[in-house]
Amino acid sequence: MIKIDLINFTPLSSFIGGLLIGLAVIIFFISTGRLVGVSGIANNLLTRSSNRLINALFVLGLILGPLIFMFFSKNPIPFIVTNSIPIIIIGGLLVGIGTKIGSGCTSGHGVSGISRLSIRSIIATMLFICSAIITVLLFSYVGLN
Amino acid sequence: MLQKLLVLISGIIFGLGLTISSMTNPDKVLSFLDVFGSWDPSLIFVMGGAILFTSPLLFFLKKNDNLILANEINLPKKNSIDKSLIIGSLLFGVGWGAVGFCPGPAISSIALLNPYSLIFILSLIAGFYLSNIIKL
Image 1 (tube, each protein chain N blue to C red):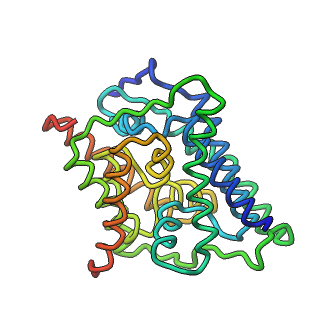
Image 2: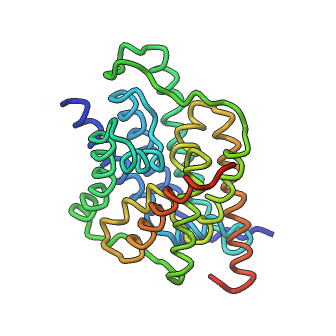
């Protein structure tokens, strides 16, 4: 049985945010001929000297985005973390290892890959959403969240 | 120069999109993944909006590559469904479901100066390096 949380459901701001993410992917594609994948950009920034400035500028932009939002908006940006530090560390390690081995994350597979109808990305996205849903289910079952 | 400016603008717009859609908030992402609890489907609208915008324009730009500023279009060439894609994606999902952070929002949230973001980012980087010793 699925219960929708109507109080926190934000279809409009989510959709507008999604359109902006799409616009960013297109601007990146026009300027570099490549598609955005944040895990790949972050990893290449650390490990490869080619395109280092381009990758650094994109990461810098990612951090500037919320700062610009805070400058123009009176509302604080909500940020709630309920996990303990060991879980955050294990989670971070798994996200790092998984996106590297699986060549992509929510942006690279979920947005860029699905947008170009890549079968690899469609399968990757289904897999990581499913394993994430199961993880959340198990965590709430054992009382970790 | 124009290329670099556009990449910076692209990063800023991406970060703004994540902020406006509250994807920088791990709790919001976990509410989406909590399908069997109190489910917040907002993330579908984020991904849906992004794909609806990107997909047709990408199709158009691939056919009109004179509009691309770079010398060539460079898309991922692999199209096989291999063991690394499957295992990597499953592992990524476990980490995503444990914390509610994926790489983009985690990097953007550095702006909020929360120690949890920094701990996550350092672990993520450690994960990148650790993946080199895992052979599939």
